[in-house]
View 1 (cartoon, rainbow, N blue to C red):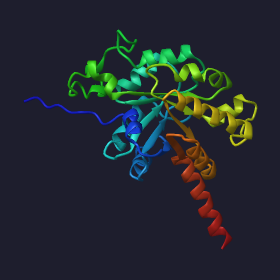
View 2: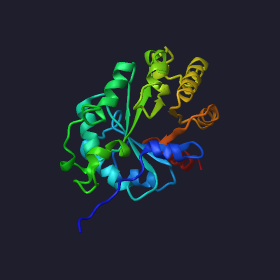
View 3: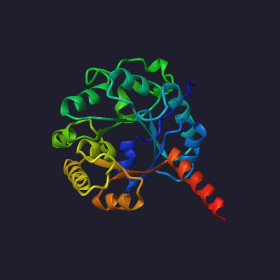
View 4: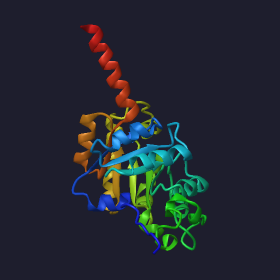
Length: 260
């Protein structure tokens, strides 16, 4: 008798089932060990960052495998909107993708097309060769692929904010993720994620997404700001990163030790 298996819930399904905001952390070091520690911490989800970190295709596989035994849902942020990269990350087994720097509906439509097989999209067919279908151990993967994949688009520019109503209305977009750092820079407030105008714009984006029935998330390393965003209604949030936690803790440990 042939062996068959099922893939874990995707991020869309986790968000639909959640009774409160999903709280997570970034995996930026490219280390399977630190990623596994984050996944074992009790986090609801972990974002593997392939945009601003030394994480590529091969290391993403290792990170996904390291976190697979744990309940935390793995999400991968790609370096860019690129159908070829999207195909490769999907084929290596990334079920949940975040695409950065989505500024308009045309880009959003390309992202949706890139995660879907024809006739609904342009994703190349190579599942028998990839981890996505567990090398054809997932029954009828080609026809069932939309069950396993979730797509999140990142809103992080003034142009994106101006187009967020249309982007939010697009079928195939499961959720939006707001990037306060780049949004602040685009608004002329570089390094000022907590500037009142930036926060006001973020609040607007959250409301637009929710009005459209889309889940919406954000990044916030400041605990006070993170709680404010939760109160605004975000459905998922990132509150720390592996590299940031290590940097802060090591610096504080040395400072405390040397002051004694």
